[in-house]
Amino acid sequence: MSKCAWIIAIALGLNICLANLARAQPVDENARGGDRATERQQQPSADINPAPPPSIQDLLQRIAGALEAGNDKPESDAERERAKRDLSAQEAMAKWAKWMLIATSASVIIGGFSLFLIWRTVIYAKQAAVAAHATVNVSKEIGVAQTRSYISVIGGGFILNKGGYSGFIDVSNSGHSPAVNPKIEVTINLAEAWFGGATMGAKPPHRDIQPFVGKKDKIQPGETSRFYFFWTKEQIAEIFDLLNHGRNTVVLTCKLSSETIYPKVVDKGAWQLTNYPGFVRVTDESRVAEGVLYPRQSQKK
Image 1 (tube, helix red, strand yellow):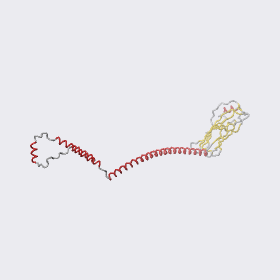
Image 2 (cartoon, helix red, strand yellow):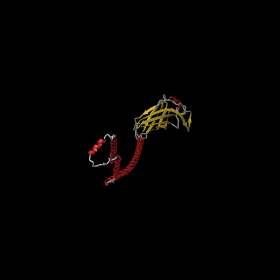
Image 3 (cartoon, helix red, strand yellow):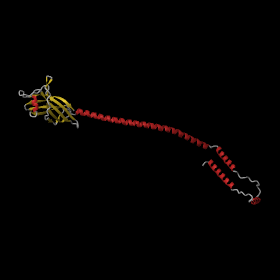
Image 4 (cartoon, helix red, strand yellow):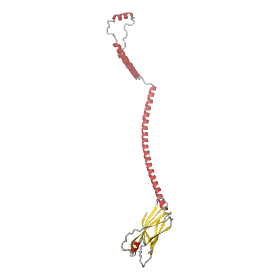
């Protein structure tokens, strides 16, 4: 507790004690008159008029005076110096607290901007990875396209006589690697004959005749391989009957496929071969017909 608080507590305690003493005085003064007279006679008469005890008001005035004296007491140099240092420390703390707030705010802003830059960097890195992957795929596709095999039908020939229809089909590999397991499937049918730039006769009905299938092991780059086919007269009897009218020609539909040196990369295509612009006619007077088959690509994959 401070000095002033102790003085106030002591004053209140004295006030309470004096009040209790005042209440404890006897009421009957006459009963003890004789005793008091005897006591006065026995006591020396040095002080006939003793000073009365201090009253409560005097005590309070003294306490107030002591408080005023304590407040009016000038501070020492050490106290003034200590107060000055405390004030300087408080001002410095307030000043640095302001700068710390500014620095913290700046750190938060810089941190947020850094996070934004990191996020954008991650996005750009992901986009670059996707672009690099696409570039690798494109480069791979270009490499495959430059080095794979490409097979195609480049021509053929036929012989038609009373024994049947036979001939060959030439397949060429124009790629830079072997065509693996090439396969050819040929079907035979009729179409309107062309002569003088115009068709002759109506379009003949389609006939379902068993196709001819030919296979090879490989066709090397730049090589032409020949596939031979043959149908007997009995197999194409209906075609023979229509050819006797001289208004139709034979059409071969050829489906070609092969594997390449790259897995899951295949070469496929379809061609039609005919002896256009001429036509084929088989009669008793003209027992043999032969010619060149001209290819026309109808499908390529």
